Length: 410
Image (cartoon, rainbow, N blue to C red; front, side):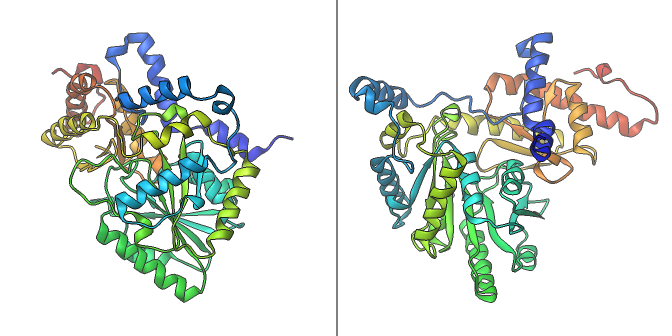
C-alpha cells in the first residue's frame, strides 16, 4: 500500500499552483496579455547584474572538479562565516558561522527545523493568515498546528490570544515578516512583546519554546522601518532565510538555517538540525550558489519596481472602495472580498480574467492575495477588470435575479 497521507497531500495540491496552472492554460486560449495572473510569488525583477557577473567569474576561475563537487553537508565554511559576519555588521548581532546550515531554499530549511525539534503531537503556533506549506511541513514532522487568527483590520498577531494559547505542548511559534500573504511588517515593539510572552511561558512551564522567524522577504521593505532581527530580542530564536526573493533566484534553491547566539543547548539543536538534514536528504546545498553568496550579501534586485507596482495597485483599489491591508513589505496585497466566501469570490474574479488566490488556503476566509511581483504593464491593464469586478457586486447586490458578468462595461 502507498502512503495514503501523502496521496491526499498530492491530490489536494496547492491552491496557488493550481491557479497559476489555470492561468497558463487560459493564456493559451485567449492570449498572454489578456489574463491577469496575480497567483504566484515569482519575482519578475531580474537578478542583479553583479550576480550574473560573479557567477561567470566563479565558473571561469574555479577548478571545475571543486565547483561541482559535494560541499560539507552543512555548507561551505567560508560561505557560512561570511553570512554570519554580514549579519553581525548589519544588525549588531554576535552570530557564528559554526551554527549556520546551508539549505536548498527556505522550504527545506523549515522542514529540517520541524523534523529536528518536534516530537509527536508537539504544538506549533502560527498566525493566520499564514503560508499554507507550514501546515504540510509541520504535520509531516508529526507536529500539531495551532492557528491563531490575527486582527482582521491589521493582520497582526493578537497577543492576548497568543498568551492564552501557549500550553505545555507548545514547542514553537512561527513568525513571518514581511508577511506572506499580507505584506505587513512585525515592528520592534511587537517583537519585544512576543518575546516577553514567550519568556514568561518558558519560565512558567520550565521548557524551551522556540521562536522561528521565516524571513525570505527580509530585504523587501518599502519604508524606513527598522527591521528587528529576532536573535537580538529572544534567546531561543531560529532564522530560516532564502535568497530567492532578495536576489530573484527562486529557481536556484539556496538559503540557510541560523541558530541564535544565545539559543539554549545550541550544540544539541545544531546536531539535530544536521541529523534532520541528513535523514531528509537535504545535505550539501547547491555548490555553485554557495560559492556565489559571499559576493552578493547585502545586494538586492531593484525592489523599487515592486514599490511602484504596490502604489499603483493599492491606490487604485482604495479609490474604487476595496478594503486592502496596507503592504509595507514583500510583494503581496491582501484584499477583502466582496462576499464572505473567498473561494466563490476568486471564481467570480476569473470571469474578468483576474487570478486572485482565495485566503482559505492561508487559514482564514474573506480575503484574496494579490501578488504584484508582475510587470507594471500588466497591473495597469488589469485595473479596469478590478473596476468591473466591483461593479458586478454592486449590481448583484441591488438585483434579485441572475446576472451575466460579461454585460459589465467600462
